Image (cartoon, rainbow, N blue to C red; front, side, top):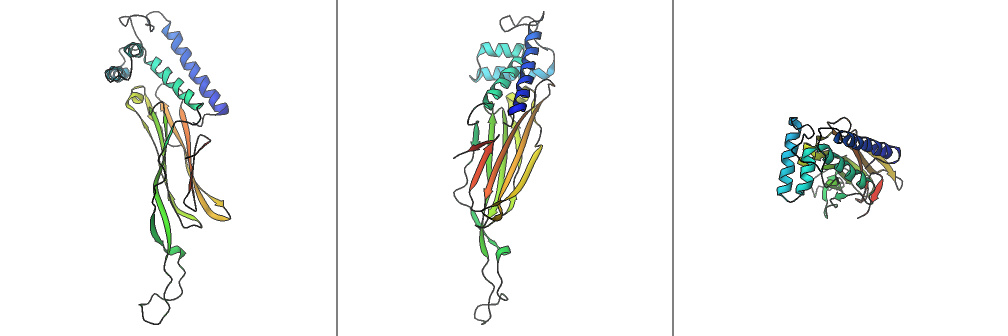
Length: 258
């Protein structure tokens, strides 16, 4: 994730503030702690925004994804589930390499005629006319859908970036790509949503005296929470497509190696 240096400290501080708020309210009279009976008043039991979360918690128990004891804690105070999720994300920030799923480059790239590189030496006349013909169009290769996927907290939040580009051994061209994000059912019940791509740039660059010798797709993807005290989550995905068809990828400043 692109939460490094000062930004990472701010994320940690915001997380600790959120956790502290949970501790203070949980200790208040009338609010059940993890060790108390669920028969006592729990956090916002009558608030419909948590109904789906409590239902999903029971479903996760039935699927064997959550223990009954932890489920009871979460159902009593959904903020505890939010706290655990944030702690998981923060731990993943420090992991090397980050939890990344990257689809490899396809083994074959399709070829198309590159008429922009064609050098005409005369009119394109029928064979046997005795007249010079246009040179055959040079070939270029293209590849679509190179996907870099960054999963956070087991896919609770997932960021994706794609890169498409063409090359002819000298330069790159016809590049494009998308940035998307998704939130799992568990994440949505905890009020998370994909908030778009504040950065989605294509940056051509010089490589081995060729320009553009490659295309750099840099994307910042953001997730937000309806609870104002929960810090935003951002991750930066980068891919470089080179003039020879090779590829480099980076997540939050960490270069990936296949």
